[in-house]
Length: 315
Ligand code: AN0
Ligand code: CP
Image 1 (tube, rainbow, N blue to C red):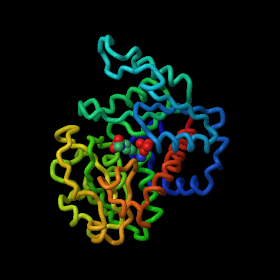
Image 2 (cartoon, rainbow, N blue to C red; image 1 turned 30 degrees about the vertical axis):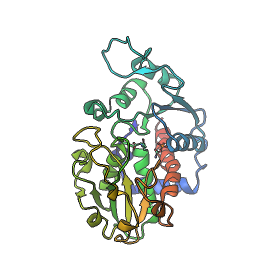
Image 3 (spheres, protein in one colour; image 1 turned 90 degrees about the horizontal axis):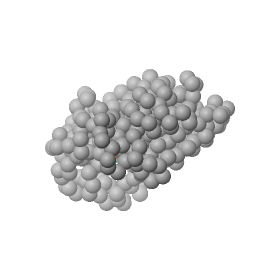
Image 4 (cartoon, rainbow, N blue to C red; image 1 turned 180 degrees about the horizontal axis):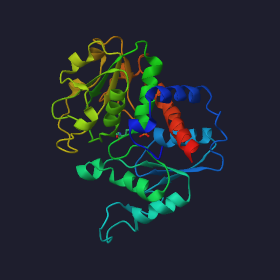
């Protein structure tokens, strides 16, 4: 695996899930695989889970993690090609990336969508430069359009808690005061479409996601109807894709509460975190015994470890 952005990069999902179960059961079994290997984790944006779970996954594999916070600790990096660098940024990605690549064996990159220029974000302009110029395997830690480590952890969590062979999984938009990227819902849709689940997406009109990620998923604009009989409810806010990066609705009736959960089949509640309580989900639902947000976050170590392990096995 030279890069990890999409569900296809991990190959057959049954094998990936079986490997995840092995890694979870015995996290230190591959401790010698990463000996004398280094992963550099580059953060252009904030993080709690991704930053810690990626380091923990690397440590479990015997690898040395180094974390760089671009904008905080390093020179501010120019990301656009062909510009006259007379602004804020003293260094360009074009030099920084091969330098970073020369210090490590593997790279993880977090670079959120800027939500200003759809082509720049949807061309994965930043992480693709890492793939092209670093000479090392590259993992998306949420990039312009995808958050694959999250979606893989979500799938692991669903499989661990599903009593049905083909559970009904509903991804619902929920209100949020800031414009958020599409990476989490895009990847969740991509992974659910590839998995053996009955997948439904619900959101107010105007919040349609990129059709290439929605694929054949059912889209239902009536949230209550979408929730009927659900086994898993996956809440997330995202900004508009068509009116790129804009907030079109603050409809608080979309906040996930016991009103919607009542029509599900005693569904589990999921969210990638960080979550704004009583905006995305009520206290009652997130604090209920059906909430999976903590085991879901814990599985971020497992998903990251499977990906790093696969990459180490190919180095
Ligand atoms: C980010 C997002 O929605 O993409 C990160 C989620 C993992 N969330 C926020 O910025 C609140
Ligand atoms: N879910 C997730 O990626 O969280 P962080 O932004 O804290 O890394």
